[in-house]
Length: 324
Image 1: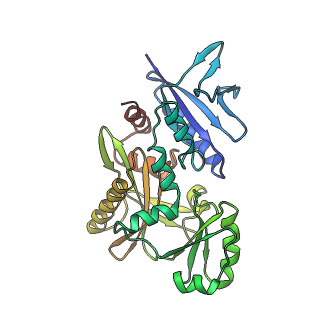
Image 2 (image 1 turned 90 degrees about the horizontal axis):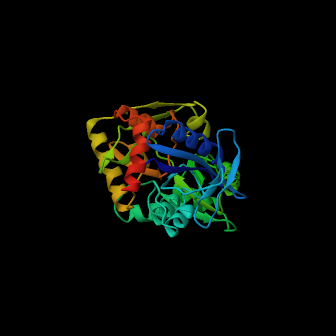
Image 3 (image 1 turned 30 degrees about the vertical axis):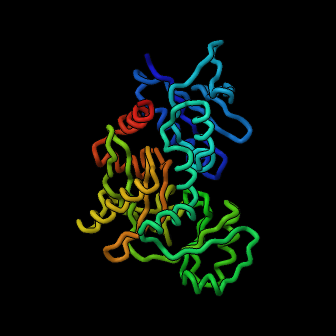
């Protein structure tokens, strides 16, 4: 009997449209002979199932079911394609755990931890993972530009602590850039992370649980046409993504070991894509994504393709792993 799969997409953050695009790709590539997939749009004001004509069917939040043509439909598994809140930060996953509904992501606590850049860095740095010098601000804190420059130097990156897809991130080249950059970041989050600039080759390392094993995918090198790997570079073609990355064997070994170490320390399951910058031969951790993009052009699907894993197989594996 075919399994009913809810592909949740949308969300409450600036990443809503990217999430919907990812969710639709998952829907299109799932094997319809094996699964009955449903697109579930999660918005602040409504949770609804969408049919092919975009008709909406209200989700019953008591058990995450809905009624279709007079029949009560329940789900066997949820495929999480929500970037940002409430999917990537663990909120909706805690709810799914409460109603005993399986899903393709890591447990809610791991998702909440990895979505918070400050807390992730705190855990990893105490376990010997190399990362940029950083400092933090909360909304309303006094801002001392001289102290910021003294701690992290210039140029530096100013970013929301809880946000993805490079929303709200700025690179400050001078002291005059810092206050405007903080204002931009505060539009996305009330917590701010400020990091020193690292000059080197940037790479992205995807890790998945595949056929019962933790698998490191071929590494992608990021070459941005812009000042850094910002939203335009990620989603509007302003970057070159080279898979496999043009790095030495020694660099590859070190960054693969670092990515696997991080995956284990953070107790992640499901999808993971960690970003690093090489300072010489040493990989420095930037951030981790536990709901990466799932479109044909997204980095992790590119890496899976290089490993000989189709999108159909990638998505089906995530569901089967969750079910089993």
